[in-house]
Amino acid sequence: MNLNNEAIVRKCFAAYETGDRDLIESVLAADFTFHAPPDPNLDRRGYFERCWPFHNAHPKFNFEMVCSHGDRVMVLYRVTRDRGPQIRNVEVFRVDGEKIADVTVFFGPK
Image (cartoon, rainbow, N blue to C red):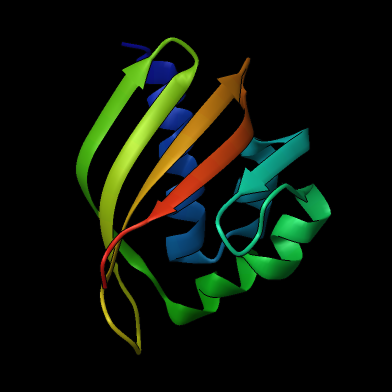
């Protein structure tokens, strides 16, 4: 288990909860990619355009499971926000050095 990788991933979630753009900028690799069913293969710029605005919903993440294996960290979480249903997803992060290189999201039931 790589606790350092888990700490890096937790910073990503903390950035959304606090709206800290500098924090999330600091943990994403320059060549970062994001994958989800509606947004396959977003680059870093596309990620900030499509995904970062979610921080405005004031999300609160409740981690149900965090697992590490090598350079991967998998997080199963529930998130609540100002409006809308609770969300439950799985995200798989690949960490390269001290940066998140890519994320793949698997959407769960609402």
